[in-house]
Image (cartoon, rainbow, N blue to C red; front, side, top):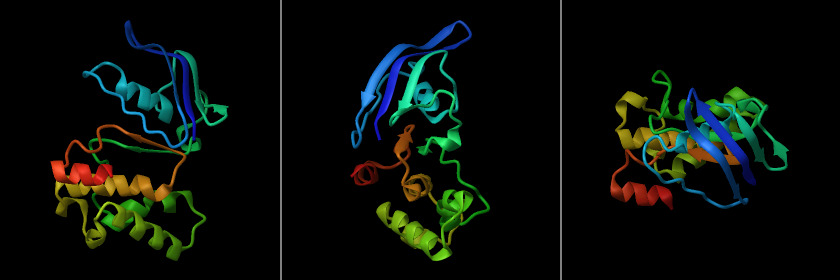
Length: 174
C-alpha cells in the first residue's frame, strides 16, 4: 500500500523532531531511514502507526489521510527493537495473538498461519516454548513472525534486526 507524508512536522516542546517532511513510498517498496539518534526516524514510524499525531501536514496510507485514524484502524504491523512479547504465552500464542484479538478466523486457519509465519523466520521448532526460554535473536524472530502473521498493508520496523547475529540478520532480511 502506498504511504505518503506531505509537509509533516512534529515538535516535542521547543524541539522540532520533524520539520516539513514529504516522501512517497510506493506499494511493494522498502524504505530504510538512516541517521543518528534523535534525528526523527522513530518519530516518523510512530506518526505513521498513529501512536503520535503530527503538528502539521498530512499522512496518507493508500488513498486516505490517516492523521485522525486510530492505530488499530490503520492495518499496520510494527516490530520494535525490544520485542514486546507476552512472557506468559508460548511462542505460538505470541504469534497468534493479533489474529485472535481481531477475531473471525477458525482455529485451524490461525494454526496454519502461525506455522507458516514461524517457518518464514525459522522458529517452527520453538512454538511450545516461552520467551524466557529463547535467545534474544529467537525472541526477535517471534516478534517478526507476529507481524508477518497479520499480513498487514504496511510493515513498520524500528531496528528489528539489531539483536541478531550477522548470519541471521542476512537470512532474516531475505
